Length: 212
Image 1 (cartoon, one colour):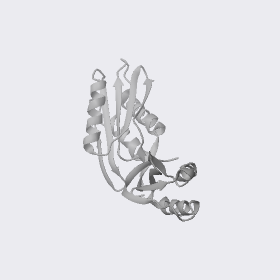
Image 2 (image 1 turned 180 degrees about the vertical axis):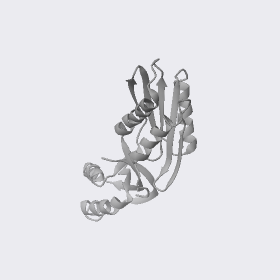
Image 3 (image 1 turned 180 degrees about the horizontal axis):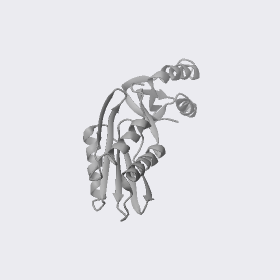
Image 4 (image 1 turned 60 degrees about the vertical axis):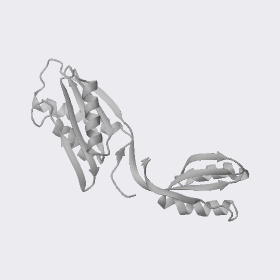
């Protein structure tokens, strides 16, 4: 693994009501400042009639991060800063959140706002699926038909994924494995085929794997 922080796997949304005000938190992965800004702009457009759309993001992770927040018209320090604090404490990187508020007519005070924005951000942070960047090999192998089902079972045992199968005289199987698991798969493939089969690495890159 080249990076140790977790990443959100998908965009999610959670909603709750605090003293008649409606709070809608939307969280998404963002792998650059530009992606984060595009996400924020999209949410602000979706909820253009809201009282506030409070954004925060962390791009990168660990010791190399770019952070941003805005109170979007709420009293200073009561909205964006608490949302960013939740992101900081979550272990997530490459993440953006917008907490939308529809004012319900009842003032909650600065302490109430901090609590409401904190809880809203926590709802999506706690609910989102998490992944990690992993260095992977993409490999191909020609699999005879009589071994196909056994190889299909072998691949996931080493955290692999079958990306494609092309059926001809043999089956050309394209697979993806974490680098750390690939040699074990190769050994098991040789054992399964009495030394006849070997997967050829055609690409090496990073992929996001779900954290169980």
